[in-house]
Image 1 (cartoon, rainbow, N blue to C red):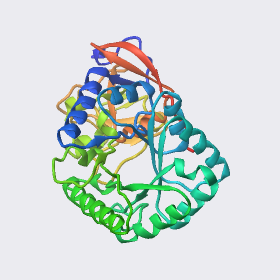
Image 2 (image 1 turned 120 degrees about the horizontal axis):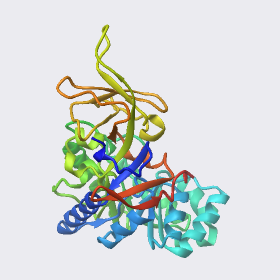
Image 3 (image 1 turned 135 degrees about the horizontal axis):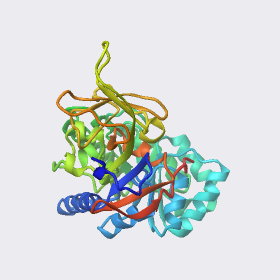
Length: 367
């Protein structure tokens, strides 16, 4: 049973199946190209220069990041077009970093209020025109973003501050629930359309209409968007699996783990094993609709019912033989973005063997 994990890997460790990764990248690139959309993948998912290079080589027009720190890593790695898809509040130290970034690449940042736009322009001063801004629209996730009817006020503040208003963006995060992806895609299209129309009617040139999430990105429906920003699609994870937005064969990232404790059913206890991959490598996300804290690709009926920092408790199905102590298993994390921010390096695997080791270059670059 140990053939699931290369012998040279010490657990717990992150494994990436390069062939599946490449297939996922090519499928998304082909889908967006077919629909006449630009692809700007969100690299906060993987945080690695090697995977970003694969995405750009497959046709991505640029990269999306969540923080200035992530932008710095990928700009230093050669990326020439970066969007910080976050409503930044910019202080003097941030502004100096943004100036340096704008000298290395085409840079866009998010804003979602007149106040943050004015603050950004004030801090950048004479360099403000070098930075494009996209106004974030709330399309139903109800996190950050303004309503479509409020974008003009933000755009006017940005323009008055000397910034270049390039368009609008949204994140349909409510697509991360069962039965919601199609409806969220429709909400996204409606909100982006209304916001873009309002800007155009106010005299602004709308060059970019940016949307997309992994649950919605492959839905081939009418859209006003000009570009999509999915991230998780490169790996897949247990959430996408249970949302039926990917298949078992699409899972490129797993965590290698070793059975350190086993218990046959007795005295009211369930059959279970404990593996050495806890929340410090799997992350602790568990939506209320998820069936556990992760899945095991070779044992689909097993469920991770509890996590500690270095323990994962796996309830084992009666139909399967209980693993032995020392047996090595693979675990699919619920939310793969957390896993990549918890490790320094990952193993790129091909044909069952480690082909390379990749540094998680933007790990911890959270500001």
